[in-house]
Amino acid sequence: MKATITTSKGTLVIELDAEAAPLTCANFKRYADEGHYDGTIFHRVIPNFMIQGGGFTADMEQKPTHENIQNEAANGLTNLNGSIAMARTPDPHSASSQFFINLTDNDFLNFRDESQAGFGYCVFGKTVEGDDTVAAIAGVQTGSNGHHQDVPVEAVVIETVVVSAD
Image (cartoon, rainbow, N blue to C red; front, side):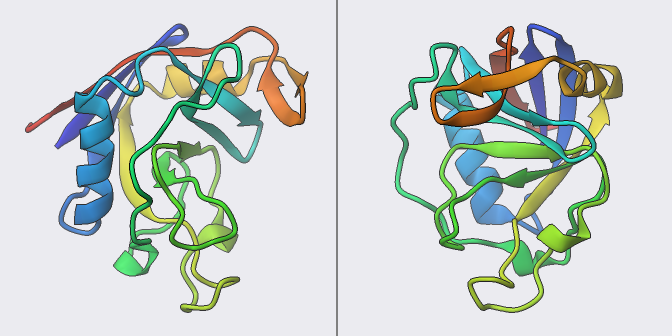
């Protein structure tokens, strides 16, 4: 499966690994098919780390989500530059709609063990087109917005996410 993410900074294509992360890919596809991601923003941008989106509107209102999913971080995929992974709270099994794209190899986010500190973040695909778009998002100016840090000063809008079989 592939996901085409069209943003206000350009388009990127993610190759989803449904074999390694079947629950996570199905969850991502469900949100995409329902239009959940349309109009959300990349609300957290940290150069040389990651860009995160999929949960907030441009006015920093969090969108409602479905139930959280089981963390599939022990699937053998790692948080390498260009990989896409699920964002979550400190609870290992708290991922819902938010995702992030790694801007560098973030080995410390990988699965180590099933403890709360070692569970890691589930990688479920990788960027196969649109590195220039990822770089453009990573290069935006950021600041604070309420209690949120690293928020782009000018919203980087996710216009659509379309998941296709090829």
